Length: 294
Image 1: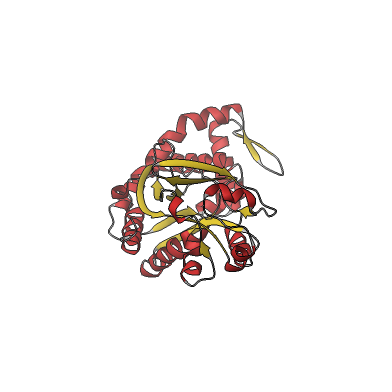
Image 2: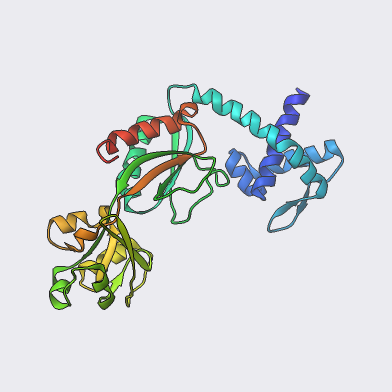
């Protein structure tokens, strides 16, 4: 029993050290703050040392506390991995599945997949986060991240799930009232916005970059889309935002002879899907929706 008690105390200590807060640790572990406080107090009494410096705003490790953390954290993670491996042997998703993504692709594709999983598997808790940052999946404890374009080298597992194309387009009213656009260089005479400050085009295997300028700037693609529809200027957005408008004539696609390569969309994860049932089922359900878009 003493060994079990010691493991419980050390696990709680590791969580407080990583969260830097008794309150956050209590929320993560699903216990009361007083339980966390009593557990840490008991551990400090057993060891005869102070492990944390406490203030009203946060707690910090003492030098001895840091030594204990450095010595025990890997072992605790190994125990947690054993639990994860056991759970992964189940044929039903359970526990928590945390996914991070951004943009309309997440709303149209990722969201519906996760809603379907939450309905189908009541023991599964789904957390879907929208964030334009490139999040450290391991540090922020995410199981899946959706990424666009070229991937940096990393230890994460990555699987291509789809591709997308970006369109350069404008409203019919804007096109009618402004100079003709037949080549990328013509954009220098126009009010352009959306994406990066340099737009890439391709023809006959050669790439060309144009530095665009405009009197409107935002990092919100929905607002860029709205501005394009309202005739403010020429926009560049992924197909998920504009393809319906182009099809129905609300926007006109420009420079079709210079369109750039399609961009890859990836699902990245710290886990091999074969080892994590939640990730495995998510990827399976996602592929059913995207099977014609790889």
